[in-house]
Image (cartoon, rainbow, N blue to C red; front, side, top):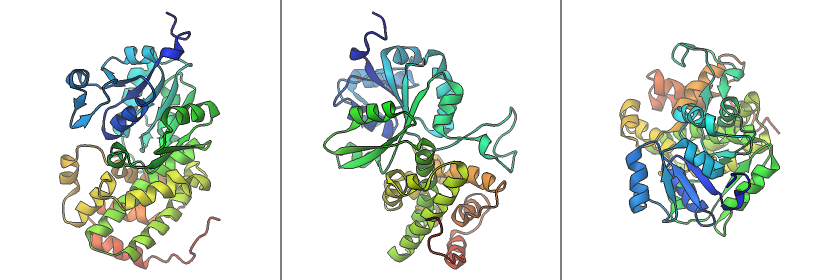
Length: 352
């Protein structure tokens, strides 16, 4: 049967079975046939045999594969739910099997670097915008896929898996991608908004992870809600300026993917980035925290990239800069927060 003529019976694909990938696969399975991709053969076998893997339950209708060609042939719509550290590699693995008719939506809140061979974040101190890639830019650079979108918003996996009410944003330059994302994901408990500013939405999800680390540190030091209110509002201003410098719009930062996600993540012990800050404030080393985390806290790498980007601009981003000093330059977290409390923010809001 010709693949394009059988689109009405096609499955929906989910690439990656971490906590968020599993939740999205289960949500999609309420309406559609779903196929998930996992790299490890034993994980695939476990899902297909027992509908369970790595402590996560899968809808009984979900089938798993470790063959990129199979999932690309079986699905016209693919959701990429892979950490940013492995995103480029996974997309390159899938690239030979992707066609212009595929529709791709990713849910990764991180950045990749577009560097020359032999270069790394450790070997270069300054990074320009054209060396930074959002995940949609990675997909467009590495594949022939045209219709690309992203998923962002206050979507803590634990709450979604419990069926708690929530909402998300599907962002894309293509209205067709937004409508398809809404059709597949929207339910009584899950609202799906659209946004045409895909870069702004991606950047909002990325940049809020930095502020979430700072919020965790605040909580770890036992500082109160007033201090958290200050941090979140200053953090949003910093996100606006950074997003603008990187090509995003103000409207995305003050929407669900920005301020919505920021508030959820800055108040949640279920957030990986919040947990990093909290544990740092309690005296754990970054190395220890990372070695004990099952999944990636994207904010750590984002701080490195944004700090290197700031070196090529005249922007100041005091929260990001001070967290970089805490994470990688041995500044005590108490000192960093004291500095931020005294930082001369003379104007409350300067971007409206």
